[in-house]
Length: 426
Image (tube, rainbow, N blue to C red):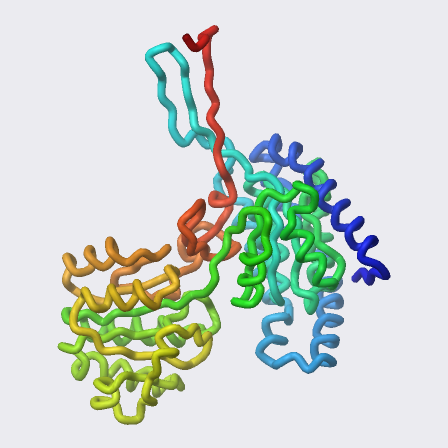
């Protein structure tokens, strides 16, 4: 951990990190798939071998968090154990086994003048990744950036600074073993919040992209202050819609899983929309299931008429990402009203329809403008691992570049490679 006596010293340190990252970018851009795979496999082995060292560093973070009266649920997110370290190492190995996303020929065509034009995937370059608490993100983000031939500047939460530093040493060991610059994965060692601002300004033009991974406060700051492109999701206000032709058994299992499997993930359902035609037959048993699992129900007047113990929902409930065992429930008159509700209140993250009517499902999936739309499946599948993409840095909800799970392939861009034979333009 670094403490600075002056803003000049911090600025000098951050500019040096950016310069080292830019210097490493060419070596990463030119690295073969085999070289990157070797780096990741060695890094995974190093995480396992350094488990005791990583645990000691993590214990220091936990003791500091307890001294600062951090809530128990946040300490749990911060804490590592043998199983979590093994999962981290296994995650790096999964990324290692993915196909190389760099150098793919995305399209190719010839012009009448004989020019041969190809669109080829390439690394983005230097990516600044800013995240909170969970130290495993250091391994996930570093591995994904490496696989895609990028350089990563990682700024984790100040509460996980020791853990992140110990994990980065294992990642650097992999880079060195493969003959790649260790500066291809750097962890910002200062807890000074001004360092984040410097990253958002681009570190003298060395940063090509910023990816925030965290809550609304962090992401909002990044979007407001960044002077370089940002790949972000602001929140996961996800919906499950029980259509008039929903199968009751599927409705019950999907709604319960979407809300209660893990309430703190961005793919957790926050609003349940129920077609008025099945409010009593389907809505009531679903609400009883949720309540039995410990979920607080906040419903409109029609919901409270069939389920009186529900609290009356307010306008604010339709806009709230609870990340807790609370769900807002609204009655709608058909498919069109459900789509309009999601369009008005949703965050373009993940939304699901439960129905046996294929035509209604197709209308829903075509009309709902979210990064992920599902038919008869839980919103909790909003996850790169579940999509077969390995680890992910987050779920992109914007319209530009990557949408949905951001894995190695989404951390590439492309260039045009034009092969000629002496052509000049008339």
